[in-house]
Length: 426
Image (tube, rainbow, N blue to C red; front, side, top):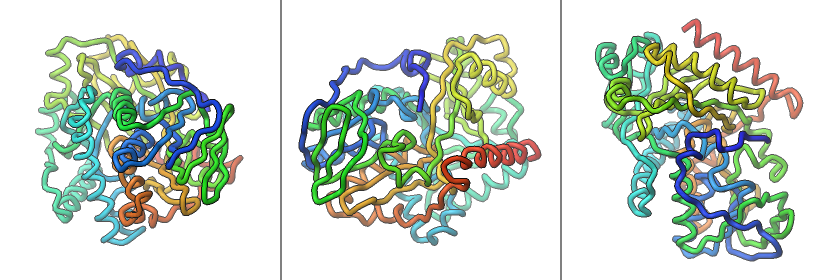
């Protein structure tokens, strides 16, 4: 899978200094080998190290190279599947447990930022916004679920209220959650990696885990070396590919595009989103946007299957941005980038085991910042023999994407076209 060079990313341009870590060469041993240097992998490594395990983390590129360092930076409760679907999949009790764990994930982010002094521009507040009355009804239903679960923080915003908060007439309602928020995802991921290293985790970059051999001790093979470990944690998500062939049929890599404007006047930026919340709409192929610490508008959306050309990203995403904020038609786009996120067929997270001592985390489906962090904590609990919470997620059933290895992407393209048409019809 090919990614843009990160120099086109706003996050890379504003990243905190991070050491260039060596490639693994030769044979190493540890208690747990973690594959993947995103939020899921770094959180897993950190929480394992805090429990006293000797941990090695392998990252194919650099820490935060994938979706964890490229996303819209939005932090919200729940899963992309939605609670109604989860209740149908696993029953009310497990669905409630998933919700409660996701809310704990919001608390965990704030705690990790404070405990490890991670400078990542954290801002509280996230809003989901409705383009149609049908969307508004969905937000009311979500609010009712929140209340049934005892989650009292979220507040419904009427048409007048949402238009007082956002400088656009595109939306007819909103649901504001003060416990959600937004951050600089690359700096957050780098901060987690640094915290893990401070607890003794050894991180190797430019080191792809090519494959592994199961057994009482797991052998993980790389291009120039090998790791022998008691447990293996696979946290590479959409980038795992041939490293774990058994997982490939359950997820699909979908490209998403993001732009950042030139810095705006602080007053102008403040008027666009007066409460400085992160915002995402209710479409299946959604738009999402937020203000940055240096007064830019960061705007994402659109799905791509044909790679990431920065000039195309800038042009196509600008059109979506201007449809929301026509007053920004003359503003320059300074950064345009893309990346792949991993979705499941039902959009619920996919956690489980390939062997008693080989666990995996994948399928965050766009909710990865909060869910991936708490997932790492759950995986560490499971390795330590306390798997009850991990197993709640492992019980969620997941179907293969239809079409097999050759037709499943064309099938997904057709499905996304259907959902896009449904969005347009309302």
